Image (cartoon, rainbow, N blue to C red; front, side, top):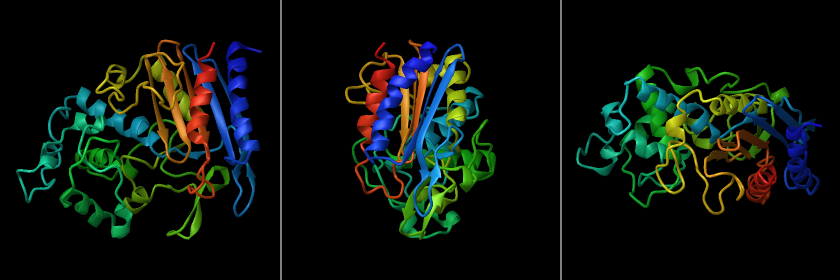
Length: 330
């Protein structure tokens, strides 16, 4: 057994326990190193309601907020590198109609970099989907709504707006853009992990986006990406190899964040034993990716912890930290 297999097996035991205790239906855990060696394990069920299907290494997941780093951050930083946008310019440099009925407001001063680092006063959550199902009208609502200013918190609004900027630059909706190698904006239900039995869509969501606002917008910059653990690990392996916008995704913007990503802090999702040169991000559906540049490895834990409902303590927060601690313990 290789060292990477042994390390993964030790961490996989935590996932096995969570599944056997009925905390989550199923999951996949993968580990890759800078030399391209990798190991993957899967267990449990991809779906339990209204039918049962087994989880496999090839199961597709709704990656939820991993979309922010796997897609939107990459696109925005690529445009900045090409000189198409200035990260320190306000969003109005691309979205001149943003709150244009009041030219002297705080929203019009928000920059691309501030959105990437969640350093804006936007609210943490906002039920946009309750305002209707017309995606064009909802985009207009987002741009003209008078947002209450609060403390800087992690907010989907930041990345929804970055997605709108991408749409304005490319002249097409996010869902029409190339999602990246190995990824998609939906997946075959027969090969997908189920998410929630949705109250307002009146069905179990399988292969379609779980995020309510992304569904109503028919694609957005904060959620909606689908992929397998293999695709996520491929992305991480490219970062470990030094390709892409690596400098900025590792450059701190605050005590908890870089450009798009989280960095280690007390109690964060990657555990206590990762190096300071680690970045990571999680997704509401039960997904996550962490890349430790000093140790030269990355790991991804993908689960369907919201199936069949989000209104249950799945223990995902503790599970993520435990897995990270075991992987980085030796």
